[in-house]
Image (cartoon, rainbow, N blue to C red; front, side, top):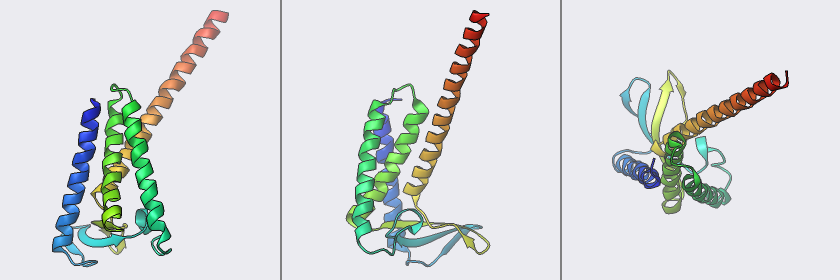
Length: 172
């Protein structure tokens, strides 16, 4: 996978996230659920905290804290993508998703001071915390990174086991 494609994909995710948030804010009243289909509502919500509104009621210090973390992580992912070999397609794809999502929420924090959420998944009276497209991309990308790392560790274990087996056969 070409590196420019990774950055282009991240930018496309950022744009899609911002367009969806603009559309929701221009058409919905905060915290008024709009039924879309069973177990799925669109509900405009403002998140001043981290994921799942963590630390949202702790004062204003967390705004700068989350802003600096988002910016730092975004810069580190840009470097990670740059240093990852082009042959590691799944890892590059996953990093692109995470970067696009991180930038989408970073733009909200920079311009608004909070993140706009609107995807409301529920079962009966149990609601998952409301989230957005950027959050979804971060979660999907993170799951893919875990899969990549797990498969790489399994490969390295297989290699070590094969080397050990060959050494044992050689020593007989």
